[in-house]
Length: 251
Image (cartoon, rainbow, N blue to C red; front, side, top):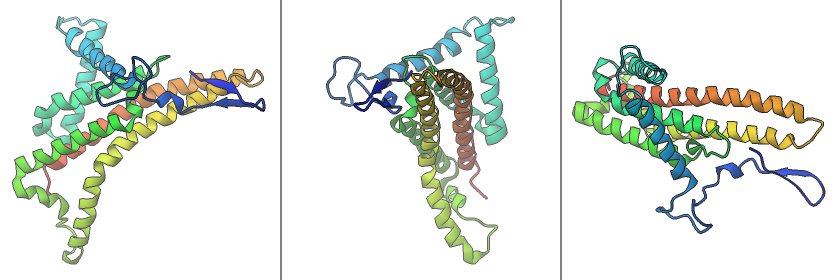
């Protein structure tokens, strides 16, 4: 996974951030908005994996489920329970959207652990779009469901009257910061783990410490596999929290 080179003075040189470069699939030209890249390729693979698991893998609907159907049912039940517990029963109608988000992020994260793959969720451009879609969705839903009462989300009635305007400004700022924190949290955690793995892989070229590097890489792979699911869970549960605010804006 690492790329090593010896510098002019004989020192070991490696570039852990090179793995996050966006490259065109065909040729070496400039990347435009319409250029097929490694990012679009692995996003498409992630979507195909979601379809294979949740559509093709469950089409038989067997009473005694296959392994694929069992995995799909476990994922379905896990996300369904999360939506119901966090956002409430009236949020169940939006379960398909949240399930799609969770499934895509899980596959995008885990596929990035394969050799020669690309982790699309390490790019802020990808996670920012996902976060902005959630932000726009819950904001529009909040006004559609509650009208101007949605603004009560920013008016803390339990606070003293003199403090309410100040708290309203703080609540408003924190609300618009949501897509920023929502996207950076996912991209930052995924990027950090992959960069650490590549650093350890770079040290594997040194014979004296290569056994330690191999053990560290193996441990980091296991940790990154866990982080892949945790970050998908965090992104999804925050979406459920924002959805709850849109459906029940009163403090």
